[in-house]
Length: 281
Length: 108
Image (cartoon, rainbow over all chains, first blue to last red; front, side, top):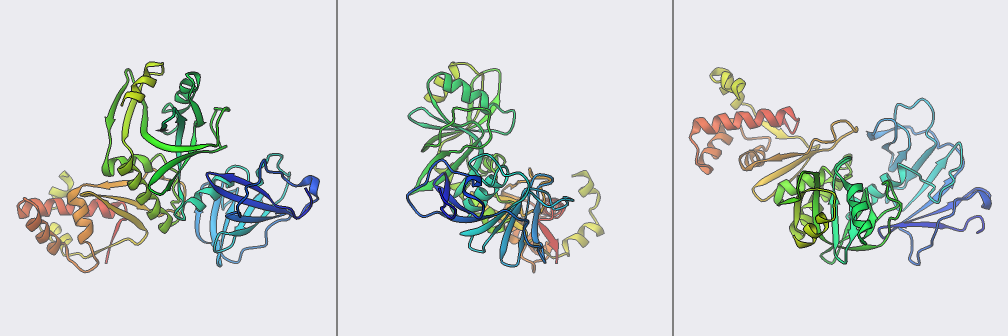
């Protein structure tokens, strides 16, 4: 690879390319290059960002990341707004979100993703909110049919992933799944993010059943519909809380999802009987 | 609820004379007879605040338009639901106070 040649990362059909201004051997390499044009092209700048005269409509996630608007640009940084030192990574996106500059200072990351955690996930949340889909706190598995198990920390996503993997099912991811709709079909996509489970897969398949996980003393399921199901989905999603239009899309997307897919609150015991229980619902 | 009942009388009527408007920083969507409300936020605190309004609260939310007084909303609720004016008034004040507490509505 030579200087100026783009690298691309594609997750859930959304691709981000980057060009380096550093020496080629210092540039971060992506594992694959898709054949279609990227949704976003970034220039990596190994220098601090310019000062921002204004910081409007901010969202401060605390120590880990923040975003704000400055002029017609959207800025994401991997530090809180109150941080005393400049953020090691600062992404300045153009108004149309199709291009931007990623300013990096400090140690160059050694992975295949120049954004790193959490900016990679925040960027995808921003892009998904433009009518593309939603990132969920979920485990997705492939049994020939797609099962989406949603839950917050401790609800049993990793336990479910391990159980189903041990019984021959493919696991897309045990903690972060993106759902997108294509021609009325809701597809779940694996991501490379988070999760304890290393055997994850980036492939996609239609969602057939959706489960809100809860540990229990027996396997049981209660159907969930309407506003209750939408509310449960939102509580297990990563919506753009800072973006009114994006939030409206996310709620509407969740409504369409629960209208199209059977949803259950699933209490389960983590043994093989759970698999048959889920299959037979 | 006890607190609200304790405010019946002049204070109760005074509340119904107020005009409220929807907070523009609130995203809402009608789902069946219910409604989901989510505030646009500036920080990670209280990310669990996703509100579901039941049928009555959702209708009150519809009727809060920045011009209608509480008494007018009460009259609509009485017409549309099988409740007495007293019950409608009590429910209305309860829901208006809850909506105001989560900053979904603001006094106009």
